[in-house]
Structure formats: structure tokens, C-alpha cells
Length: 322
Ligand SMILES: [Zn+2]
Ligand SMILES: [Zn+2]
Image (cartoon, rainbow, N blue to C red; front, side):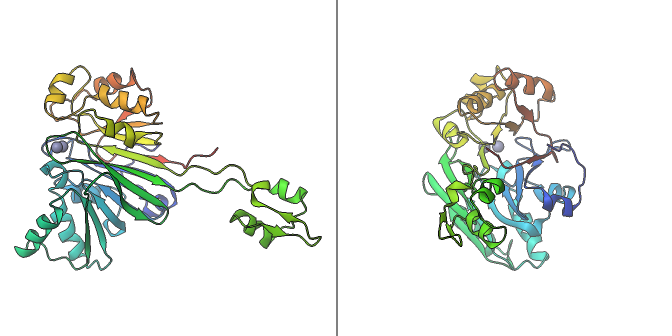
């Protein structure tokens, strides 16, 4: 994990397999020390954004991530602290003369909202904006080798949580086993690695399962905000490498949190523990709480691998080996 790298080179970032960058980690209104909700996932040279609160593009410009690499933006709900930065960001992409399409995934009403921005000439994008309104639990976005599914969260308005799952990767290639079976180095190695059987000169056939280890799981991530504890949170977070969960309130403030459709650090930790997540990152911290160590410790009593994100924190992940 890399934390608080002020600015790493883009070339370096491109070499990292997966990276989360937190652009805003507060709730309600933007503050100098904590902007409102947004984070990005950078994978294989492409950028995916989750929520886009006010001034997200300013935060993006302070990070190592480039807006030109954006492929899709996922919006959880229409509260301003999750969406008010979107018109500005899309306006700037137009000023940058973007031509590639951008996918925008969010709650019902998003098409109408966007059409109104166009109608009033607030936005006139230079590129196609492909809007996908989430109309029920299930897959909402597919891209190369991963799928994002949505599930309804329990908040004050229609809100969707997201789960990103990469396809499994082929197992590790055992060169020694291949040689022992008489496979010569060269193209046959590649064929076996891509799952094809090969026929040797003596007529014997070698199948991929003889030289490949077990399939390796792809990266899995879940994002639960804003929400009080609910079944969907557990379903989204099941077996993920990282769960990004809102923690508007510290542990002990459950009554207040749930009354307002939010979670505490302890709620998020229970979700991570019960879903057998590998790591928990807390975000959407109420601006009134400044003792992050207390928020973190309240969660760690329940789920050890917890961290409270701060603006511009970066977390890197390697895909799992088996
Ligand atoms: Zn919020
Ligand atoms: Zn909200």
C-alpha cells in the first residue's frame, strides 16, 4: 500500500496493477481538509470513478490520475455530496476536447438530469455520454474482463452499492511439469497457457490441466455508500479484496447513524468481517469528527485490517495468487 504519495509519476502508476485513489473522504459539504465523496480505481491504464462530489476535478488534478484516462463514472445516489462535481468534470473534459465516449452509471433520473443540463446549455459535451440507469439489482456494466453489479442500499433516497469483479485468470504455468511431459520450449508453452491441448511429435497429447495450477481469482471490490447496515452490503462485500464503506459516524453512534440512513465505523467493520473481506477502507467521514484514530480503532476492534482514508490517499493492490 502507498499512502499519501503527493504525486507519483503517471508512468509509475501505469505499472501498478490496481490502485485506489481517494479524492474526497468527507460527508455533507467540502472542507479544506476533506473534500466530499469520490475515489478512483486505476487498472490496466484505465480509470474508473465512484461518485463525484463537488470539486472532485480539483482533487483529481492534485492526484497522479489523469482525467483523460476516465472510462466510466459510477454514481451511488443524487445527494449533492456524491454528484455535484459531475457537471464541472464533464465540462472540463469537453474543454480538453475529449472525443472518446464516457459511460455514466447511476440511479433512475440520471438521463433526465443530464438532458436538463444540456437543454440549459450548462453542458454541451464534445463526446458521447452513455448513460446507464440502474433499474434493479444485477449487472450494470461490463468492460473487458470485469463486471460491475449493483444492489440497492438503505438510505434516504434511491441509492445503489456497487461490486466490481474481475474474471478468473488461468493458473500459473508449471514449466518443470511441461518439460517432464516432453513439451519443447516455444509456441506449445503459449498454447498450453492459453488453455489449448498440444500434440507432441510422438503423438501423445498434453492437456492444459497437466501443466497449469488452479485458476487465480480476479480482483474484487465493493463500494457501500450511503447506507445503514443492510443485506445488500453483505452481498456486495462477499469475499472482496477491498471493501470501501461509508463511516459517517464513529462506533457507538449507531442510533443516530441509522436514523439518518448512515453507518458507523463498527457497522462497516461488522460488514467486512461477516462478508470475509480482506481489507476495509472507511470513507464519508462526518466533517465534525477529527479524531480519525478513534474512528479507526472503533472499527479495528471488530475487523483488524481497517484504515480510514484521507484525501489523496493511494492504496495499491496486487491480484491474488493461490
Ligand atoms: Zn453522502
Ligand atoms: Zn446521501
